[in-house]
Each structure stands twice: as C-alpha cells, then as structure tokens.
Length: 206
Image 1 (cartoon, helix red, strand yellow):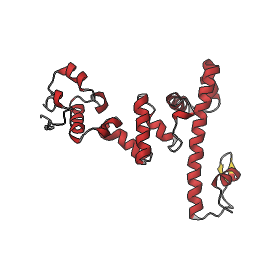
Image 2 (cartoon, one colour):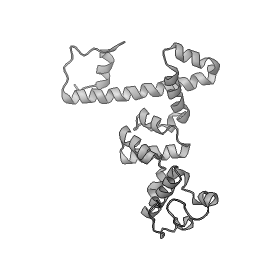
Image 3 (cartoon, rainbow, N blue to C red):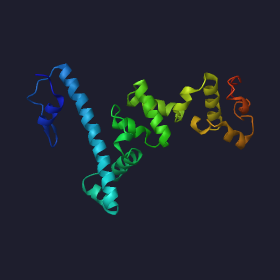
C-alpha cells in the first residue's frame, strides 16, 4: 500500500500535536510527512483568511472581539487580515506557492504583487529566496526591472540609491526629471538618455 502522509497525519493528530510514539517511518515517508504538514499548515492559514473575510461581511463590528475570544492575538489577527485583503479570492492565490510566499508580497501594490508571485513561481524560489529578493539592498524591486537592459537596470539602481528610494519609485524617468531636472545629483548622467540604452552609467559622485 502506498504511503499516505495526509492519512497518517489525520490518525496521529491530537489536540497538542502528533502521537508518533508507535510509528516507524522510512526517510522518504518522513520527508513526505513534513511536506504534507507544510501543505496543511498553508491551507489552515488560508482558511483563517477566508473566515475573516466571511465574518467581516456579516459581523464586522464584532469581528475583533470574536477573533480574540477564539484565542488569536491582535497582532496575529492583523497579520491574517492583511493577507486576506490582499488575496480576497481563490483565483488571486497561487496553489503552487505557500501562504508565506503570499504574505511576503501582501503589502506591495496589486500589479507588483501579482508580478512578483509569477516571477517567484517561474524561478522556483523558496520563501527565503523570495525574501532575499525583496530585501536586497533594502529595496523592494519591481519585477519589471528584470526586463530592462543591463545599462538601464544599473542606471535605475544608481538613481534609487542617490535618492534613497526604491527602483520601482523611479522607473518612470519623467517624474524624476520634473522633480530635479535632467541631471541626476547622485551619479551625474543625463536622465533624458536613460531609456536610450546608450548612456554609460557613471560612478556615484563622492
């Protein structure tokens, strides 16, 4: 009989954990159990989000008290509610990515959120790799930068560093030109040429 990790979890689950004292697993079976536990955990987290959305539609004024009475802290409740609002329907969620993947991008603008999840799926990033991608140089990087030329990407990154902002805030060069004129005060090159692909990125001025 094939090993059924979900069935094992269901039959060994107690109110305080798994009763594994009489179980003997192979390494492969143990790995399957861990993978299945991760899936169940992610499903549970989405279930909490769906309950919060359902409750907010019907008993919004009472929802805080209901959730706290059920054992959730305010911080945990807010954590789930933020993700629930970012991904309100099942079609917004990607089944092949975990709840944590979705949580990491929940604060992004909607389109950027969707693009980042698609990029994560394409590259096969785990949660740590996605978090590193988001946190790199303390900047939230827009996936659209992946499609720029190397020169354009370098220029965008230099401008972002000079203005102490994120690359996605300065992808539209027109707004930057309106704010400070055609020359970047940090790296010195002509912003009007940045999308030509011909302006060489210069070193940042001391």
